[in-house]
Image (tube, rainbow, N blue to C red; front, top):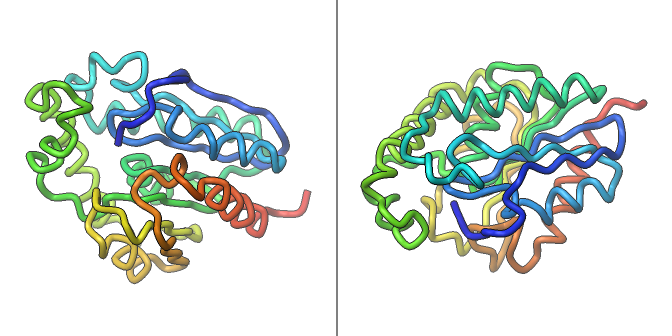
Length: 228
């Protein structure tokens, strides 16, 4: 989901042999996960935060992008990071969390972290109305919104294929997604840990407590990394 308009370019911070692909939300850019990216890099984790097609500097084309474009972009970034690092973890915010689960169901990754993933998204019209202040013309973005809902359905269907451990983060004051989203994931993933963050909303990587979020994810990754 969009909120940050600065630093919208892709980010790559080289820090060590363990890598993490960090994916932003719908209509957003790497700016909305920048504190997380910097927090992970400061703890020795190499981080790649790509710009998904139709987002960031390419936001004017959001209405012309579809699920396949986002997946293709994320898969390309994953391959590049895997070529540079001994192991790769994937973290995603909102839409990025759905893409992270999609990748984990199809590619070998060491672990996954979802931040406020809208796994139960069903109504593109309702999502568009909520995002109208950010999208400008929700009608033009409707094809992309339908792709978001389709991705949520695919992710729900494929949860049984995710074998990597998954850290599920959700704020207890998140009114952008269904409140039962985190529990839904925790109950259906083979190896998941649900952490509900008190007093937090949807934008976990940006709002108050973002330092704790970065620390939690860094600790999660480090605990699941092979000794180098």
